[in-house]
Structure formats: structure tokens, C-alpha cells
Image (cartoon, rainbow, N blue to C red; front, side, top):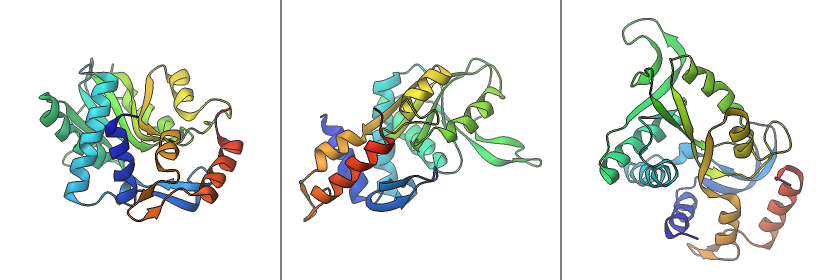
Length: 225
């Protein structure tokens, strides 16, 4: 496993973003692990997070895009942090864009925050995690409504490796098939388990036998076959 992936896994756990226990997800699924990018709250955390995203986006999409789009609300700081990091690490000025939950009809009007979108723009979407693909259903129409833009792909921080809305393909694979663009992740849950299982971290074993058994059982029901 690449060094930056190992560092990112430790970073998620250390930031209390990736947790293990009993959780109910937005999709209604009961999960033994939970990822919450909203727990990145300090300047250093956001700086490092932006760097990990920027490196993954550069590896996955090169410089073949113009705009990073982060869906409201959690995607907004992700897009901002990654855009700053991209300029610093790769010397290229891309633009950030996000959406409002409601259209603003005065002052800075419209549904978008940050950059506007214009015909010919190539967009990479950025999110924290995609469990069932529901958020993409909301985001793609917003982008398409802005003009002749090309969605180059989606980058999430964690691939949960679960079936999507169709119940057969993984959420990221389902997005690829349905929308025709790439959907990638900085790390997968398989990589997280491989790296953390029975490994001491900050004086604790994050994934012990009981935790791994719960994860395995979860994937028996919701994992990609």
C-alpha cells in the first residue's frame, strides 16, 4: 500500500473522522463503522485533508479539469481546501464551486457559491464518502443545468465498498455505469481493514477480532459480491 494511503488512514482515525462501533447511516443501513468529514475542524486538519485530496485527484485525473465542485454542505470546505492545496502542490489555478441548498434571489444571486460554471468547463466532484449514490443523483442535475459542462469524475475519501441503489454493483461502480464518469477514492475500506487490523495505534488496537467480525458480517449483507 502506498505511503500516503497509510498516512491518510491514520489521519482519519487520529482526527476522529473514521470511527468504529454501531451507527445508523443516512441510507438506513446499520454499520460497524462511520466516516464523518465534518470532524475535520482545525486549520492543520483541513490543510492536510486538502493535500490528500489534491494528490489523489492529480493521480486520478491529472490536470484535465478546470473546477472542483463540492456539494453543500460538507463538500464546500473539501472543495476549498483541495483547491488551495492543488495550487500549492501542482502550481495550477483551478476554481472551486459549490451549491446552495436554496437559490439566492438577491446580491450574489443563483444556486452556486464560488466560481460560476460556463460552457466547456471540466468538473471534478469532491465528496467525503458515497454509500449508496443518493447524493450524486442530486448533484449531477445541478451541474448539468449550468451549461455544457463535462463531469470528469468524482473523488471521495473512502470507498465503503457497498452495493449502491441498484443492489448489485458497488456504489462507485454504479456511478461509473450510470453516469459515464470515473468515481475514485483516496482509500478503500479493504485497505483500511488491511492496515489497521490488529495493529497498535496510539496505544490501542483499532480493529480487533470482534470489530473485524462485525465488518465481515456487514459486508456479507451490503458488500459487493
